[in-house]
Length: 390
Ligand SMILES: *Cc1c(COP(=O)(O)O)cnc(C)c1O
Image 1 (cartoon, rainbow, N blue to C red):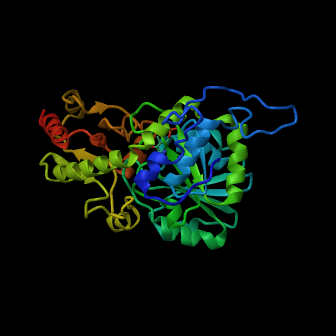
Image 2 (image 1 turned 45 degrees about the vertical axis):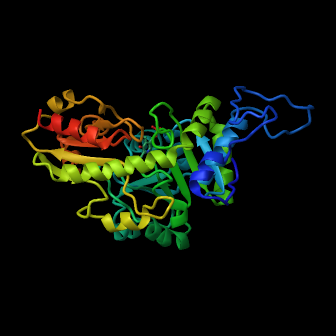
Image 3 (image 1 turned 180 degrees about the horizontal axis):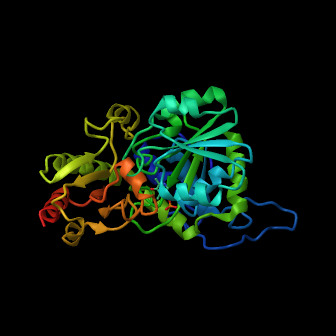
């Protein structure tokens, strides 16, 4: 757990926050690979005791993470799912939790296969609709978990309206901010209570680290999460924490390029004869474009729309042949790395969702999800064009 310092601008802070210079004078935060820390006496309680509770590298990272979301407290985890599990462990039998219906597949599995018998009641609802949220709230509702934009249909929930609705009822609002990153959306500033990240994605940014984070302002939530983080034992390794500190230094530059490339590609796809549907919150025909424009802002306050595009190829295109023509664009799950990745939700991330359900959601065999990287956008477009016209 680490406290945030608020003063300078985002780009400067992301480079310097948590970047501690020790007595050696090393310009970069040192990496401390140790499981335990020498204590001066049997009765002392030093800042660092044992690495499951925390250590200097994790502590530096958590200071940086708190800064990213303008939070008072932040917590590093070994994966996004470990961070998600910590949120759900805050609740007890008899409590009721609402979750966005198109939530990340791993969260769906956690709730329906692991936590289903633990006494907390979960309901999956359409969180783009405030009336549905209102009608789903019960006396024992303690949390609403939003994923916005959602995967792969990029549906947007209005964080500030949901937070306004929940505050007087003492319902916590948590937001999975993985898709926008802290450079595209600041849920705590919009009224949410907990921000969750799979830092495996944009924050790590190079498809080489698995990790997660939680950020909160409220002391009582922070105390609960501190206990869970220490006790359940899902901290990242110091090495991954050190790599993440390195990643964050370029986060805002990377994300700026991810987002601008995505906007160009979305517009290009929209005009392609063989593309029947383009889902991108930056396009005016996206059903929640206005909300995205209002709540998704970069550090300079400009509206941004993310680096993920879902698009559907028409029936003349064979998606397997399309995939074989790709070169730089890698066929893989995950997102948010510098390299462009493409996946087919129907047979990959959503393979376990029943066929009928997928059809209802509009997740067809020809729907592809592109995580736009930071390569030259012209190279990406010419490769996509070549593959579509295989
Ligand atoms: C990847 C992802 C997760 C899970 O994070 P891991 O780091 O893979 O455990 C959760 N939510 C979203 C939106 C994700 O993209």
